[in-house]
Image (cartoon, rainbow, N blue to C red):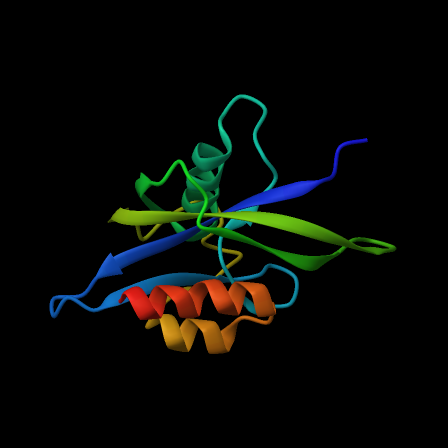
Length: 137
């Protein structure tokens, strides 16, 4: 059986002063800060599925890189178990942000400085990815 994995997007934007910001969303179950992610889509390449998750979970669209910028693992809580999943991460330049989106009633979203975003997420490997974006700032 093939290893299960998920795809994720890190939506980014530039402030008026040129500083980089990253968009995080809250998870539906625990309310902790995460990046938009989900299962691969059978009909789309992984980067396009990640862009679709950014729309569904965070209400943003934009240009997404076809090449992943990294990956991390996390423990996915399921009804009666927990399993470790690998998440392939793609960088997205957000060009559109809507006030209404498919999961708006289930999640909060907010833009953060990359260093602040890294402090808010739990997964060490994701923290490292976000910190690396701060260095590129």
